[in-house]
Amino acid sequence: MSDELDDVRIERATAQDALVLAGMTLRWDLEGGAPNRKGFLDEFASAWIEQGEARPAWIARRSTGDPVGFVLGILATSLPSLRRPTGGWMHISGFYVVPELRGHGLGERLMREVVDWAKGRGLYRLQLNATDQARSFYRRAGFGSPQDTLMQLVLTDRLPTS
Image (cartoon, rainbow, N blue to C red; front, side, top):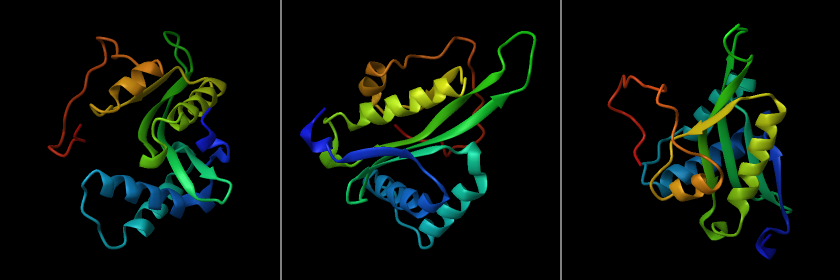
């Protein structure tokens, strides 16, 4: 582990962290070139709190409390079936590390935390949409292309860009 990360801890986010997650998401979006929007922080925080346990999140913070990374997920649980295990899966909808800590191991620590949590909950799959620049990171973390049986129907022209 890098000395840069000695004072960084990772914790599951709670409702009290909603504005921190909103601020980190705003930073990530602005870094990606999205235009700012008035009221975004409150809009995000309210939506995240409202969705509760279906939206697990983790925040990496320095000992000062300053956030330096986060992961957002969307849980999908499966009903009992005779053909497949009961459990569920999670889509990782957001994964961000501040630029000054990229390449120091924080992303790996965040991913390990999420994977351990998912295994502990009995989830059978994690999935995400990888940007071109993050694809090698996710491959190193064990992600690969989905099964041939996984398909999608695009319902809007507003898909995330790589």
